[in-house]
Amino acid sequence: MHAVSSKSGLGIADLSCYMITGKTIVLLGSSGVGKSSLLNALAGEEIMAVNSIREDDSKGRHTTTHRQLIMLKNGVMVIDTPGLRELGMWDVSIGLDEAFSDVEQFLGKCKFTDCRHDVEPGCAIRSAILKGELSIERWESYLNLKNEAIFADDKGAFLRQKQQRNKEIAKMNKQIKAVDRKLRGEKK
Ligand SMILES: Nc1nc2c(ncn2[C@@H]2O[C@H](COP(=O)(O)OP(=O)(O)OP(=O)(O)O)[C@@H](O)[C@H]2O)c(=O)[nH]1
Ligand SMILES: [Mg+2]
Image 1 (tube, protein in one colour):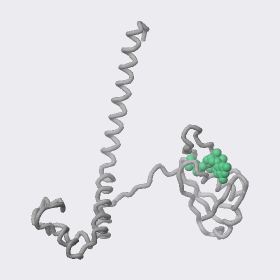
Image 2: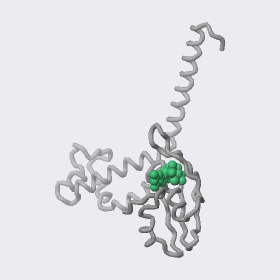
Image 3: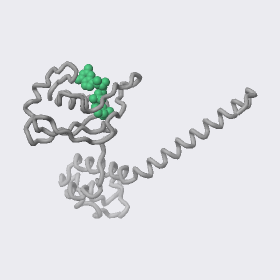
Image 4: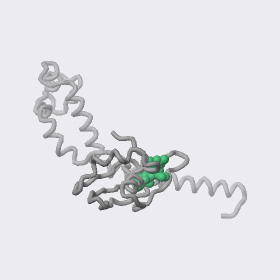
């Protein structure tokens, strides 16, 4: 970990150990953390546009909107990226079975096909945990990732619902304002 200042140049020299010709460096982080400023400091010139962070919530303004590879004079390549909006996973379902084969081997072995692995009798998961064949931590990790996969798979529907809700709120606000104007006797 290096503490650096792109403004004063403090600590920038310590990054020379990463300046290896032919290597590519990628700058990642939330908007406004100073990725483009760092690139400019490393390049010694203003290549990328930078923008001040928002006064009210100290968040970045998503100034960089596309990935850009810059070749520095020393032959090192640096990729500047737009600020990360969120961290997430995709194709979780595909990798889950492989990563959790120790868990999956017990699935489908319960007495009831719709077993929720909770209090049902004949639950293969609970039995494996009790016998020490499956650790509770592994089971919980599996459940966490499974939940994330459900959200990731259905994100489109989630976003569409959110958009629809926002539209309805905007419509409602418009109606309230119209009624308000009417009550005041104002024209449209
Ligand atoms: N004091 C100080 N300010 C900095 C430093 N690095 C960046 N800033 C300021 O932080 C603000 C955001 O910097 P950017 O370089 O645009 O940030 P970014 O991470 O590229 O942001 P996005 O392109 O939106 O992802 C600018 O006002 C910079 O001047 C630093 O090391 N010290
Ligand atoms: Mg930037």
